[in-house]
Image (cartoon, rainbow, N blue to C red; front, top):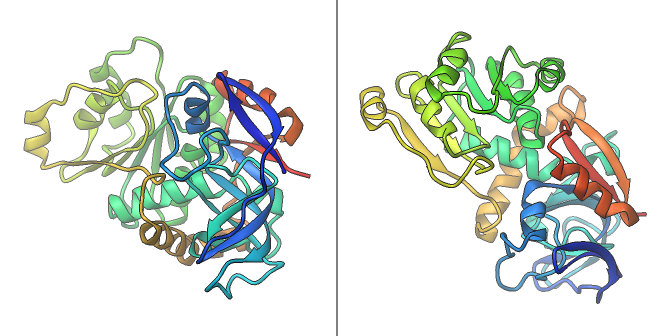
Length: 324
């Protein structure tokens, strides 16, 4: 099969053995695979996959058609259009994935478009609902509002009746995010002081839940800006892997801070993430009130171009590789 391969920090298309589904798995003929920041890190050698996963084929999400069933599997049936998350290897013509990590693509949703849903939307939903226990009416803050996960956070929060504040580096990204339901936008300029950033955030209301896709010094602003009993979920570290925490503010507000990552979770945990997402958000995908924000779809052969565009930090929403 053809696959996207990382070779000495470069992206190329090469031939690799077609995988076979193990017990409990299905083989999916991939139609689309989303690009994510984690793929850029893997390209740079900074985010290797867990043991047992192809070390040189990136890709954390897919959409496609079930081609073959492994032992012990009778669902989803062969021929079913599915999407899901994997720990790696999705950017190939075929991927073997645990059957419980496959979600049926909602009726009427294009299979290529569905390739941009799982990693961003499952992450956003799990961070808000499972980790932070978000309830309708609470205010959400998301950093990097124009990213794939950021645009997912906005849409899911709005569907739950939660107002959203978002930060981004440019006003143009915030303007596009407003079309998705963003209520209050803050331009986070280079070198901005965290107290000043927090003041801009709270001018639209103190957030009850923070989904931090940036990390680094932004975590300081999260603590300053959060409402009492707020919950801060750190999902990314674009701005760095360490932060200064204003402990007195955290203590006085009785805040909770947690980190989250899907890639290293157990089979059972990923199955739960998938089913909970589909139960709560699936109906919104079906009626198209929620849909991934797609910046561009690249042909599989042009994967290197897609990677370079993602690395430019100029995109809004998702980039997808179409596997024909």
